[in-house]
Amino acid sequence: MKVIIVGAGKLGLRIAESLVFEEVELTVVDKSPTPLRFLNENYDILTVHANGLELNVLDELSIETYDLLISTTFSDEANVLICSLAKKMGCKQTIARIRNPEHLEQMAFIKEEMEIDMLINPDAETANVITKYLTKNLSLYTGDFAKGEVQLNGFYIGDNQEFVNKKLMDIPALKPVIIASITRGHEILIPHGKTVLEKSDLIYVMGKKKDIEDLKHKFEEMPSSGKVKSAMILGGGKLGYYLAKEFVKEKIDTIIIESNIDRCRELASDFPEALIIEGDGTDIDLLEAENLQNVDAFIAATGLDEINILMALVAKQHGVNHSISKISRQNYNRIVDTLDVDASFNPTHITASNILKNIRGGRVISVSLLLGGDAEATELIVSKNSPLINKALKDLNLPEGLIIGAIISGGKVTVPDGFSILKPNDRVVVFSLNEGLAALKLFLGSGEGKKGFLEFFKKH
Image (cartoon, one colour):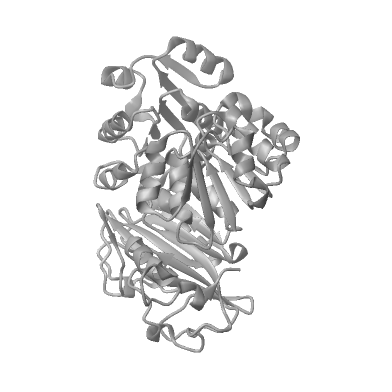
């Protein structure tokens, strides 16, 4: 598969780094030499220092030979035009990033008239994920496989006495599922049967849809998981706009704190149901006057990570049940995990995840939304020539950090144990943490003398 990415900003880089170790011939185009230099120094990628809007650049790259073009520049108009030109010049599929709310109502028209296969809006996608997080009562949806029959979810342990201070092997509710990982403070753990759960743990669970649904109900009974009826949004920018749009739809009483008076007027016009306050969102007296201590959720959605993290902490100190921070810098994920903030969301990770899901036909999804870019879950098909067939999982010597969370054989879903055996054409769902990804890269053939991972598994 040949893929070209135009725009090597945060999103473009994230997608490129995710595709590097796959069977993809990758090209990245950008007007700035700095991100291209980073890619050249770290990966085997063709980089082109040029303006992707220029016809001669696309022509010289033989764009008609590419299977997919993804345009992630900072300009909506440029992204749409680049995708349209590429499609007319013979590129098979195109994806454009769109951010401006003014373009939201025109997305269907743009897709059809400009012949773009997929439009994706980072802030709208993030608002949608945050809304699902709040309305699903702490059930952190991350993805599904096998046409929805296998799910991967995250759950906070909280005060649930059925789980706190118990060994995994002694918890009946967890018997039908696989615990893929545990986030504890700033650590990500690969658990075993004797691992004891703690109050602050966030567990990632993989299993059959029905078993995951049953587990959700247990966590929905947690005292801290009440229905969200009111929310305060700090920042009335693009993310704040889309959050308000989602919240109004969900009939959540919404307060928006925004410092720009003109923007306040626009928001008041767009959302007459919401309360729009002009003021400094870091002014604690103002927040208290606007009833911060009594809202169910607080979302810090300004353009500054540091302010978002700080104010999310302030909200938590005021007793807000759901305190959420938007973050843009990947290296802040681990920091936020150690703080008293309920959740953080990175628009770049969310957008990259959705684009990658589209590229890979839904068989591989990034769960970096919850693990700061440290994990992937992959659905693969076992090749008939694989040396892994007819062997028990306990005898496969898979790299540390790789977990086979489900096997789909003959249409039947099984949560495996050490004695499960793989057969040709079985579908397997593999969960891999950061350490596992490093091992996976070796299996993919980047290390001398290593067998390729795709000799064992083949992508469908």
